Image (tube, rainbow, N blue to C red; front, side, top):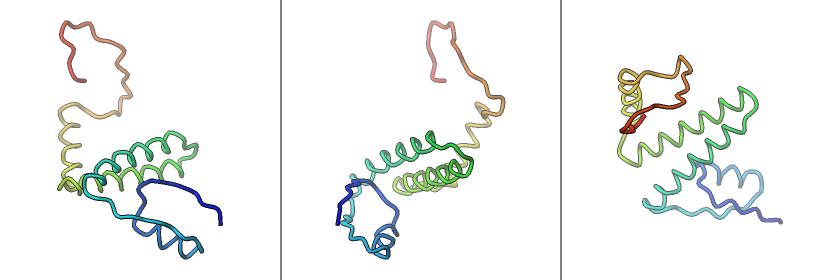
Length: 115
């Protein structure tokens, strides 16, 4: 049987799904420090997949995956998605959202600021 190497974080039911399909998987449990690092890599993987989508259906699936990884990152840090949403709302009130589709080209300023 040919082997495919993944070396990536997967959802909890993936091992069962592989077994049902007749495959044999080696899955290990990460330590908390390893999990924290790998979660960030998983977020980048999911964002990359979003960039590669060509349909709204695929984009919706990738956005759901991004939210799942965000929920895991928040939970691992002792936060809830409600707290994340509250911070999103606070920043929206203070700095706005992206409804107007504005693109900042440059600022002539002696002291650059975090934008």
